[in-house]
Structures are given as C-alpha cells and as structure tokens.
Length: 278
Image 1 (cartoon, rainbow, N blue to C red):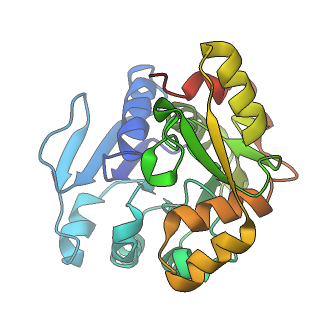
Image 2: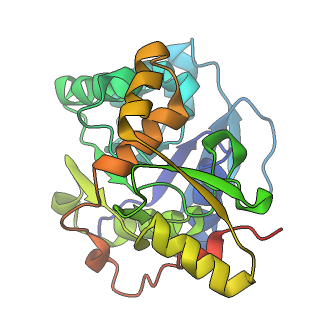
C-alpha cells in the first residue's frame, strides 16, 4: 500500500469528474480519507471538499493543498500553463506525488501540441517533486465526435492511413478506476517518477467499425485520409488537433507493453461498447 490517503483533483470536468467520483467511492470503502476538488466551480455532487482556487495566487493554491498527499491534475489542454504554478505551490505545501494532466495519447516527442506537458515534467524534476504519468490512449467513451471526424451517429467517419493500425483505447471510468487503484495500492517506490501505460482495449479502426456494424446493423461510410494529407493540413495549421490525432493514431501504434497487470481485477470495457449509437 502506498499510504497515500489524502487526494486533491484539479478540475472536475471531462476527465476530472470521473476521477473524483471514483476516489469518493474508494473513500466510502475506507481506502482513503479525503478528496478535495480544486476548481473555479463552487459545488460538486458527493462527499468531496470543494475549494475554489485562484491559480494566479500561489498562496491560494498552497492553502488548498495543505495536508494533501497526491494531487491529480486534469487541466484541459487549453489551460495547461497553470500547472507550473500548481506544481510550485504543491512542492511548498508538502505534496508527496504530482500526477500531471497526461491522460490520452503519449505526449513524448510532440512539442507542437504538448510543449506545456513536457515543460511541467521538467519542472517537477527540477523541483524534486515525484510524479506519475498515465498514458491511456484515446478515450473510448469520448473520441466518437464530429470535431474529430468520428461521429458514428452520423453514419460517416474518417480515419488517418488505411485504418489497420492497432490503437489502445481506454474509457474514462476505467481510467479513473485504474488510477485510484494504483495510487492507493502500489508501494511508493513503484509510483514515483514513472509512467503507466493503460490499454482498455486494443483494436484497429477497421476492426472497430466492422464490430460496430455487426452489433448495430448500421453501415458506416468510412473515408481514409492519407498521412501525406494530414501532414499538409498540419503544415497549413499546426493547431489542427484532428489532423494531429489521426496522424498519431495512423502511425504510432499501441504501446509494446502495458501496465494493465498492476490492477489484476481491472477488467476494462471494450471500445465497441463505448461507441454511441444513433
């Protein structure tokens, strides 16, 4: 057991809300003592202590983190810059482990979109504040949306490459269960300054679409985007996240080894079971 009993989650939105709910379940089971939510909101359903924080005020952050063992950041990509102030305040407040907002595809080797994530990792090392990174692949319960050309309810989807590259997906409820489990059950020395690679389900887009059609009886119109076209889109607009994501998924492939076995009873859901049906 890690001995970590007091947790703070920064943000309670698309990712953080799942983590807060899971931590509260584990609190009710006696696994941990306290769950604090640092947010600009003022309320959150459940037995969490909500503390509105001014992220431009280090003392405000320090006061909120008093007595916290682990801070989990779920800051959105648009606000990643505030993690620097949070990390500095966390170190001064005596936080023992920092989990930066690394959920999703690995940020290593992609400065265009993830420069702020690389920066905070360097900062944590410089501060001497132990950290844990969680790479989950695309969210199995979120990625199916029109902004990413993957809205299955429309009957039309687009993917990069030929659709045969294997990809690891994990749903947000499964991510929350895994993160809470390892942070409370693994020894401290197995948590500090390392990354965890999760794979709730690993399939190619072509396999996913075939299984979806078999399950629903609905035919999907699939457009395959050449990687060269994705490169051209990124050259024209380096902030084109849909092009970036599809290029990564078409070329990177899944992790050669996962850390799923650290949670023996995890049993994550399949990607097809997370796809919305019209």
